[in-house]
Image (cartoon, rainbow, N blue to C red; front, side):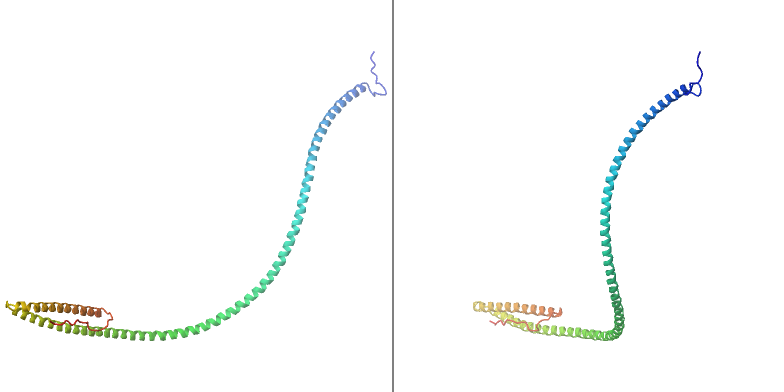
Length: 259
């Protein structure tokens, strides 16, 4: 016969021990599962801790670098502040100097404006005097130009008369010399003609031949001299007509002795 009564003091009712065992078994399994999960978590945590330690180490190094950079930045900032303070001081001094210089320039500018105004007034006075004088000189210039033109006209007229007179003198000298030489040629030709007539006699021809030759040579030389004198006088006349200044002298003639 099966005993179905509870097993005191471990059971309050029948089956409590079996139920407890089952629960214990379940708890064992849960514990095992929890231990496995714990081990997994612990392993993962160790890995994460390693990573975090690496990150921490890296962060510490970066903090050191950042601290160095921060120290350098502080030093640089202090240097910049000192530099800015020095520049600020210099700028204040420059500003003070510029203000002083600006005042001097302003005073100088005002003096220059006053000087310019005085000079402008003086210039206007000089300009009026100049214009009055210029107008006076312009009127006198017109009168002088008229006088100069009249003098030039008179001078040109006198020059024309002088040229005409010089040409007339040269023409008279030329005609006189030509008349003299032409007369000499005419007389010589008359003598030559007479000698040739006398030489027609056979007995007189030998005696007169040398005289005839001499007179022919004489006539030829005189004609050459006549041509030379005429040419030189014509040259002088043309030079005078062209306005050239020449010495008004007679053409030198060669005195050719007659036979």
